[in-house]
Length: 584
Image 1 (cartoon, helix red, strand yellow):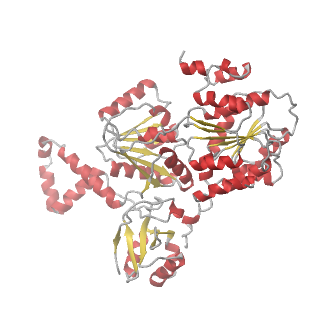
Image 2 (image 1 turned 90 degrees about the vertical axis):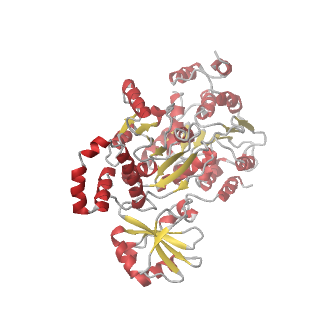
Image 3 (image 1 turned 135 degrees about the horizontal axis):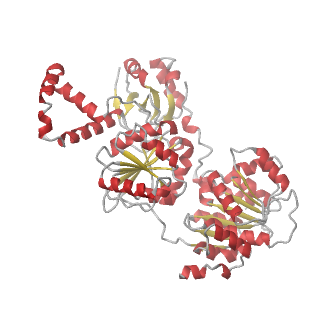
């Protein structure tokens, strides 16, 4: 038995036999370090602020002692009773997981999980029956409070899980509205408060001092050993709707890795991995790897990938753990992972043994907060880039095709000389070779895509101004003056460039030639086709990165896109408003 197992033995703690049996059924045979450190302070009723890495057992570190405390209370559990424990989580997924962990280790207590996107009626029925432990997201909990259905005046224990993420996601006002019901100024009868987080910047402690009891316990299992992603990896992010993702991933692999580099694509589900591996958009030989594949076949697949038999591996996170494959050029994550450790683990498949690598994370607009969460916890900054342009794809495909020609033996060339002569006579040498390269590369049909959100059939334009634009209507007016009133129908997703010295927007690719013909540059205004994603105002894009270069020329009012998340992603200054809940 290791020292850790000895220290975490159940017999060292006030844990009932029934709870021990349920923990063992979950595969837990002793308490982990974070659970060892927090059990006694939580069980004794102290306020606690605990910092530990995701995946180290943080949920059980507060769930076990709270369950033991409640189960030891002989008070009758009458119908309609209000919760004694409130656990607030920043996301539905985390709330579900926390609620499941509670349910798995108690048969005496009623655990409920409330979050948005689910019917209210079922939750109201649960409140009528009575709840002991309530887990939820701030939005739905606040809804029930405002409707008068939920009573939090009897809450004795409040847990804020992933508190730093919750405040970063703009939930500060909702959280303070919820806690105002249960907390009173300078009262020793306030609920026991437990803050858990993987990272605890100084402002977390500043906020904690405002409303936790003066004798709170501080537990730090990370210290200065904060885990960060490899410095040899460049981290890129592409906004893309799920319906366009497979096609764009194919283009990304072609441009960033090509037919000769190794790529691993990570998916969240086995179904997604299977579908993507079979998608015709990925031109390279591709195979999938996940938990449903028999072990023997998984070994054959990994051996083939290592040997270069095929170049693209599509895998789920569980099946891919522990992969040690040298010389992986590109890692693609089809969506932001649910935990930072997964991101660090996945991105670490490239940039190994002194090599550099690229990790590209796909996300939808609604997943922007998850991307920021990864940035904060992993200590990285994503460079927001657009999808590969048609020019990028053609250049990359041409290089691959030329490399393929180098591998053709002289003996095989002899068989095609006569056909080549006839083709040159018919098409000319340059056109004949260009057609052959296009066919070899598979780039015979290339679709234009928006650099802003990857939608097919759109071209991204940049309209630059010689002076700062304070109102977007100024740009709209200039476009209408030269292009006519029907420009409202053609221009989509208008947003400010960083510094507000212009705007960026999409137009249908079919309208590009007409707009080129009608537009005339002036001293004040210059319009061009964007060749890469420009830097955008952060509130609109969450921070765009790129040179904003464009191919210039001379000769529906959907610009609200950038403001859709304005209330959701507030500035860091909002964290300070959190302590208003305690009137201090």
